[in-house]
Length: 286
Ligand code: OGA
Ligand code: MN
Image 1 (cartoon, protein in one colour):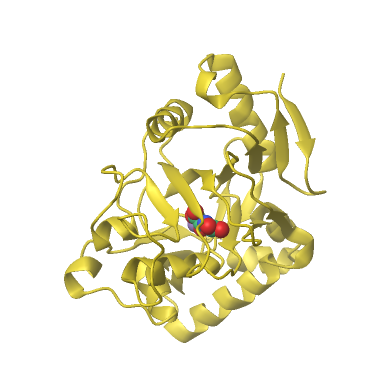
Image 2 (cartoon, protein in one colour):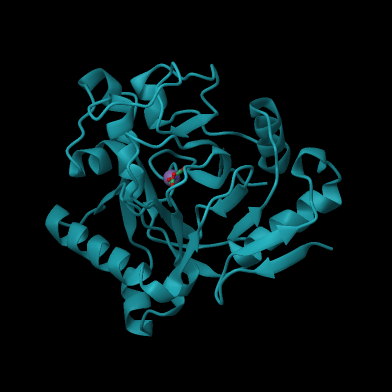
């Protein structure tokens, strides 16, 4: 039913011939969800969403949206809707953010490997990222397939990891790059515990659930758990597991946060305008 062109040997595909703003038929939405179970990252070109259309589509596609974002804890959402995360190099007034701008410094941590909204419970399921303004320099996003990363582990290692639980906190991941929330901001971001290995209901495949937000293994000494998490992130982000997306204006990329990690690649954001909007859905049983 869907025309999917694979973009990588393990995951990620481009879907051709669908206008998501018009996609209302339950059969189309179900076909896109099934393709998400297979590919984990889907690219749709030429989707000129307005903000309202993006929120409507995300809600129609998967239900409830994540609003407890780190940027909401910093205040000042320029769209007046916490479900729309401003993934941009500009300030609320639309001008390029300066070097020391706090929003900018917080967003810089998107350049660490992560999954969205692993620091809340329920965690993030799908993220939908819409490109409005793409700079003339490359500013790509990389995705890593956490199902392939799981499959590639030795059986003994798989047994050792099964059943472990991980504490995720955005206060931790920001602190790791030297960005600290004020106590009243941090109080709005308490963190959450999730399994290290999850079985994905749609495909039955297992996946490592990792992120920069993953702080430590519950019930383990912190340094020991942190070293294991760093080792696993290194394993899971080998070249063979990575798809690199080169943005075009009006791209809409959907990824499954349960099955992938992603990171933004560096570019000079104090000189180049880049504006994307993200909506993330919550992993609530359907
Ligand atoms: C995000 C994100 C990376 C990028 O939107 O969640 O991590 O390249 N983006 O902007
Ligand atoms: Mn992200």
